[in-house]
Image (cartoon, rainbow, N blue to C red; front, side, top):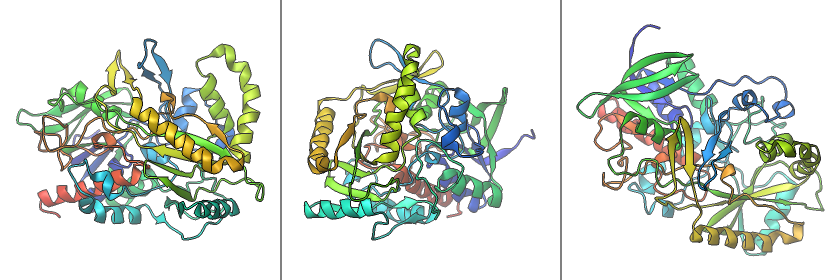
Amino acid sequence: MTPKKWDVIVVGTGMGGGPVGLKLAQAGLSVLFLEKGLQPTLKGKFAEEFTGDSNNNLKKAGRLAEPIFDCTNINRKKIWPFIGSGVGGSSALYGMVLERFQEKDFSKWPITYQQIETYYDQAEKLFGVFRADTFSHPNNKELSVYFQTQGIGTYRLPLAHRVNLSCGQCQSFQCDQNCKNHSGNICIEEAVRKYKATLYTNCDVRKILRSTDKEVTGVRALMDDQELEFHANSVILAAGALNTPLLLADSGLGNESGLLGRNLMRHYVDLYAIKIDNHPEVNMTKELGIKISPEFTLQSFGRLPPAQVIASQFIRDIPVLKFIKLLLKPVLHFVTRKRLVLATIIEDEPKYENRVWKENGSICISYKIDEKGNQKIAASRKQVSHFIKKFGLLLIRSAEKNEMLAHVCGTAKMGVDPKTSVVGQDNKIHGFKNLYILDASFFPTSGGINPGLTIAANSLRVADNILKNIGKG
């Protein structure tokens, strides 16, 4: 490999790394993407061949193949969260919903909605966000009319996808149809193919290299069992809210505030499977948003992972129960294929004691829901159940389960004061001239919707700032 110094190294290829790398490459900067995961190659109908029982299948799914450890209680528990690992990161697994945070969601942020608004426009255009005023499926139409008679507003979810009549609305796993617009097929492919960016996969960044004057010079990584160093004028970390703080900690950087890895947040998610008798046919159409409460979002979930995937999640670490899988799969198949599934997304709040760290080379988390969080969950279940009980409600409780870890954020908080935050308003780590964090680690609050669009919009905002600072903006 010929030694080279890039303008920018981007660690991670998800919604934080992809947009900033693409925009900088479009401006003529040399960009190197380093991705720990693989570039998945899918053959055949993925939902039919995925078993969920092996690390190879998880890698193929674009998911974390190695477990993380839930150390909240005395006994360490292995969990396999639905977090992406591969080109596109978690965006390659997401349900394609790209919504804007509301202005009130920025009340505790050091940047305002107005500062990011134009970049929301850019991000929606980049990812081809599709909006419509009407619902295409009769189930969604009937539900919308029903909720409106109850004085509750509904709306069509903004989806980032390509028109494909056979699209299965897949999430939490990958299929081979390439319908969803994610960071991999929208940003990374374009940056590499058209703007001469470089992408290395299977590249595990282990350490950030620094000079003595608060500047970083590059990274050290293990790629294909070979230790290599890559050098650049700037380094952007977008490896996810679990990995980014751990990489900084391993490098001895970014923890002057003592908050690195702290304030771990996620969303509380419950699933509601309902049946509409007038339209009993299978409905996987992810298009309905329902505004029941400002505290949470209720929306179409789309296609659940295949029944065998969910069954494997239940019995993965309990070998004696594996025989139950044969009985469990038909029940799960009924729920995942015969009913309309709605999901609540409930906002979490930052708590210092919730954190991520590394122990004996493994990722560990400690996460407890406090009394206020439990009250939010209970209130959401009461409200939703009241409105949809007429549809034969089946509640799949998952909000309290750390195994369902998703939309992780907050572990490298943004703020003005270096004593109480990790990065500043420009997303640079306090005290450094050229080291940035652009994944959801920087979120001061979690919001009550999918964070993808906000991550991407902020990524484009920071790209403009970088270009202005070097005279190309």
